Amino acid sequence: MKIGELAKRSGLTPSRIRFYESAGLMRGVERQDNGYREYGPDALWSLEIITGAQNAGFSLDEIRNLLPDAQDKWQHAEMIDSLKRKVAEIELMQQRLAQNKAQLQAAIEIITHRPEALPCVDRAQWVMDKLRET
Image 1 (cartoon, rainbow, N blue to C red):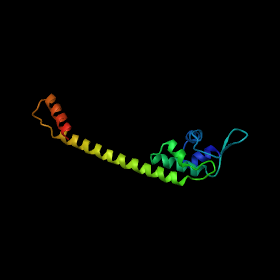
Image 2: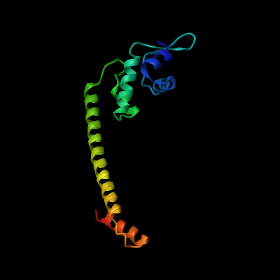
Image 3: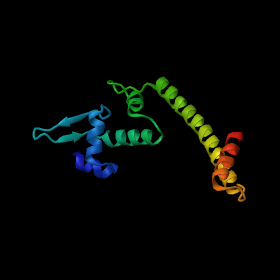
Image 4: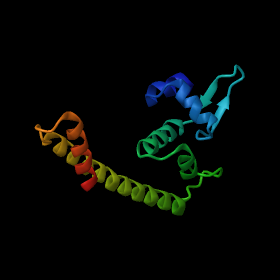
């Protein structure tokens, strides 16, 4: 299929598809005599894997390592290891986000309940002191 049809079916722009091809993520792309790209039957499936992996947080280099090798063989052990590493990264990120959320909620609480009787400059210092305590 030509790039326009692939773009329509995948929901990606032709430039995004060409980018994936130039990044070495798309295999089996042939050029016709007129220079048009001709994508094989697995192209749509490849794009779904690439975009799904990107949505899961994989970099293009990580995705390149997940895709089948030149003999179209999946590297199952490496794939499992990569997926496990990504899960661990996500869990660490969730912990950091939970800590950030707690800090922001504490800041909101402190700022909301700052003493009104203090002058503005002193209130700012009071808020900063309380934030350091948490």
